[in-house]
Length: 255
Image (tube, rainbow, N blue to C red; front, side, top):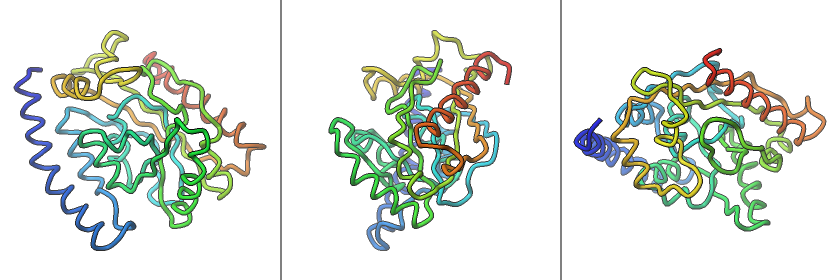
């Protein structure tokens, strides 16, 4: 791909995105907080513009309450997951400041937490429970940060507290970057799309817009029920192992 392609993609994102963002913001202002959310078709259009070919396996929850627990690779996870079903995110406070995708997350009605402060997740857990009570589908990344896409980081069981209290079904989801321009994505190419460590947001976004097309495989596993597990720690470990094993099979070309 070329820099000209990246410029065209940015122009297309602005041309399509700004009217939808403006309409959604106005609707939220007029109708209140519960009017938040982008249609699934918009997220799919964003994926197409930025060169993401999405393959969805399994059945996504069509309605809530439900909790999606996924491995975390990049800011790309926002449009990729939003393209599967109507949902909202649980993310770090700084996600709200990301270019375009932070705006998408805010207007999706996301719940933001400050993970730098030990006790800051209390109010967010309360808000998450409220969202479950109103029938929302919420997404969280139990790793607490993004990885390079070659494996899964240890899950934090505290992230499952609200689902445990409300008895909400948990949908494990595996996100895998599998192909670039139709060929298997190798370890050296993964940093082109996986955003982790101290990578700067804007240069990484610019690199993605110059690359592609990228094939992303999104697999929704069967829902799990907290009541079937002795504790949320056991539930967290089960979800982590399920996603880790599935990701390993996909990257090995055996799934």
